[in-house]
Length: 277
Ligand code: AMP
Image 1 (cartoon, rainbow, N blue to C red):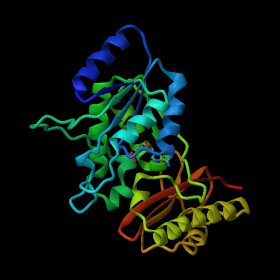
Image 2 (image 1 turned 90 degrees about the horizontal axis):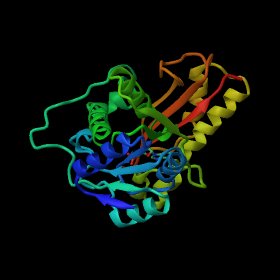
Image 3 (image 1 turned 60 degrees about the vertical axis):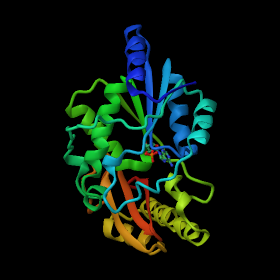
Image 4 (image 1 turned 90 degrees about the vertical axis):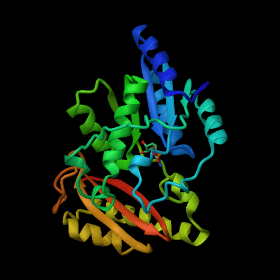
């Protein structure tokens, strides 16, 4: 595995490989890698000739009062995980932007509501960094996790609207053995908070079970989940159409239940598929 700190050196290599007809696979991350990230690399590995992973904690997607400065980092551990997963190139840039970077990519549609409502500017920061990374890495396809379900929808829309020649592949959400969705931010949780974090997935699983038993009213399904939550502040809990993310009052098509909540100071996300019975 080769480590690149200069994004333009990686771009030169990517362009040469694409010109030779190679398939370039790409998994963008913010590091502090875990089995969820690794599953995306394993999904990508057999589908490409050259697999690139990037680690960059993108300041553009953090709000002024968010955790940019304390976001967990472990470059050595991350490099070892990538090498073990068969990654060919690891991009670890000190920065990705020129000092006078002046372009922002704003995606409407799926950016609205959910995390878009509680984190103003977040998805513009995500779309801007992803567009720049696509230009640098020249991927044939890129893999994003369903853990960040709205982000995946935003990136699909960005790629379609700007006609970027990159296939977007979604990878399933990976959970710990106790049901908690794996996240770099789980490192912030105290033992008590970790116990309470489990109630998010427990609530969502109860919602899935109620749907499987025939309940179709979104209000009832959502209160089934919320009754289990032992969180400090619920940011949102919603039932949305799985494809368009349109809000649903009735479970009459494939859907997704999505939650964001604070446990202590840590904001956690989770989501599950919900099918009409
Ligand atoms: P992050 O480092 O949090 O920006 O995540 C990088 C990529 O890994 C994103 O596409 C995430 O959706 C994905 N990811 C993070 N956690 C998980 C998980 N538990 N399961 C699947 N994908 C994940």
